[in-house]
Image (tube, rainbow, N blue to C red):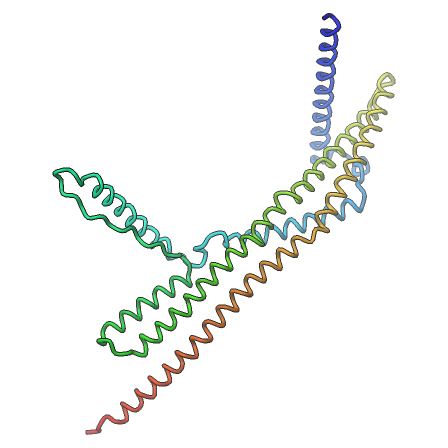
Length: 315
């Protein structure tokens, strides 16, 4: 039992010593960083990192900046309404209608067997996509119906043109949803994942190098100011710090190279372009077909109008 107690005491002492050493290193590196920031350390006293490491650092920073820059804009594809600001007003109206329908249906269900008059159940509002293509298709459909309703079943060229326009935009609306889903899956989420994983790991490795370099320079300062009794211990601390910096620098170089050589970002960029190309091709084809038919209606309407005006008798 006594031996066990001694072992526990020994382990506790080791843990305390390790914690104390870790705290001392952290404090020394913080002091060193502050001195460097205030210009209290001569440039030649700051350990120079390998040129390869510094070059990789610059390239990783550029890669990260590129990811953030494109991510900032393309994240709109995660929100369906990015091209249709009017949807805010429509959503408020739909929300109010939905609440009203829920209250009416609740009353209709719960007042059924009472003496109070029960309202008739109300259907909730139909879900509508809030994109500009969908809105254009809905508006054109509504406009076509309004025009056609005033002529008693006869065909109206403007009404037909609006119906064709609506059909064209319905196809584009479907393509828009497909594009957004493809961009989210094949580009946006993987692109963000790169930021959250491999780039973050490389940045953490670089931070470890920075801390290790500060610890080394702090140890060098301690050796420089150490008295005779502390010289040997201070020299050992410098050697250990040098070994630690070399090891951490090599790890960081490997991780940064891995990030920079990864082909995924260019593959993801290709997926973004491909999804956009498919969408714009579908939009161009749909509008081209519609425009041809509407142009025929336009020419016919213009011809009928010219003929009608020439047939008007002159007084």
